[in-house]
Structures are given as structure tokens and as C-alpha cells.
Length: 252
Image 1 (tube, rainbow, N blue to C red):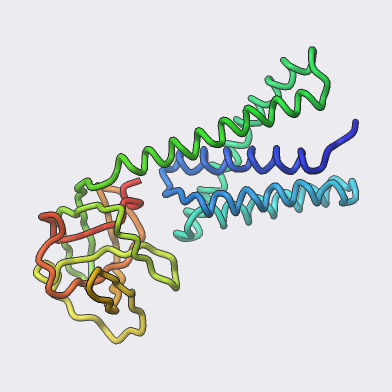
Image 2 (cartoon, rainbow, N blue to C red):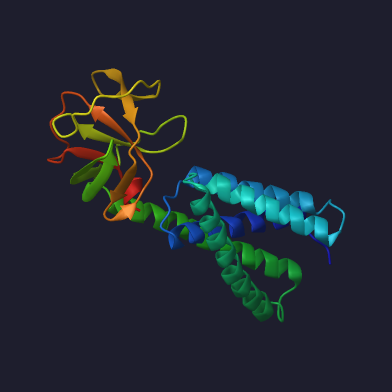
């Protein structure tokens, strides 16, 4: 059967994108479109290059497994080895579900359409599903805007609890780890930073400054354990009536 390399790569790109979106939603991971697109692009590129590799099944199986691990690592922020393995598991579960659906689709249309037209029709449906998934993820993200959440964390053996204002405008993250940063009012959090060379740049309309980062021993948002860093906002009493300001991705 004749295989069109560009069509094959595009089909795999769309299918991989759907898998990553589905796996991310199944485990309530924060989804970033750039990471999903980059990861799906890696999958599509590998699919294209695999057409030129020797048809040695053990080699192809090993390479496919290695690429899938890389795709998961790219798609989601790293939150420890355990969460990484869990993401891989959900990715493979999603692959099994999607594979079953595609086989049923091809079995249905393969009786009346040529392989080329069946692939084109499949490309159309995958494109529509991929765009719908991105749109749905964006809608869910926007529904989380400007909501309040319960924040609990431990630092230096002390436990802190407060309400936190979730704002999509808080895009602060640590450049070293990629973890999101929660801003705390100095009226609520009076700890002084330990010797550290880790800071986060905070820009406002009128000024820019560096704030030292704190690493909590544990942190929970609405009862769910999260990984994030803390920064104390000097001279700020509250954020929307709350002593903490967190990124909306921590609500997902």
C-alpha cells in the first residue's frame, strides 16, 4: 500500500495531540498549548522518519517507546518521577482508547472508500477533534479566572492556611524549575528569606523588582497537593481581598 509521508506525519501529529490532551485532562494536569504542540510535533516528526528506518520490529518498538517517554516529558511540567510515571500511564491508556476508536472508524469507512480517501476523512475528523479539544481546554481555563481557592502550605515547620485569589494575570514562574509562583502578602507571611540566589522578577505598570523565592515543604490548593514556590510581596496588603495570589493553572 502506498503511504504518503506528509499525510502520515500530520495524522500522527493530530493523534498525538489528542492523546496528550486527553491524558492531561484525565489526571487534571495544567495544559499549555505550546508544550502540547511541541510534543505532538516530536511525535509527528518521528512518524515521518520511521518510514525510512529498517523494518526491524524490536528496534521500532524500542524507538517508539523512547519517543513516547520524551513526548510526555515535554508535554507536562515535571513534578517528580512518580507523577511523570503516572502521566506516562495515562498517556498509554489514552492511546489504547483512541486506537480502538480509530480501528472502528477505519473498519466502517474502509468498505466504501479507498485508503487515501479514508485517510483524508480521518485527517478531517482528527483536525476537528484536535481544534475542539484545544478550544475546550481554553474555555475550562477561562472559567477558572478570578476565582478564590483554599491555600494550605508548610514552611519551616509552620503551617499556614488562607484564601487565595486566582488570577490569570499571574504568570510568574521560576526560570530554573518552571514551577509557578504564588505571591503572599507580607502582612500574612512574615518569614524572612534564607540565603538564596533564587529570585523572581515581578513587573508592574510602574516598576519592576526581584522578589526572593521560598520553597514550601508541602502545599495544597483546594485539598489537592501541588508543586509551587512562594514569593513575599512587600507593601501589599491583599490580592482581591485575599492574602495570596496564585496562578489559575494551580486550580486545574
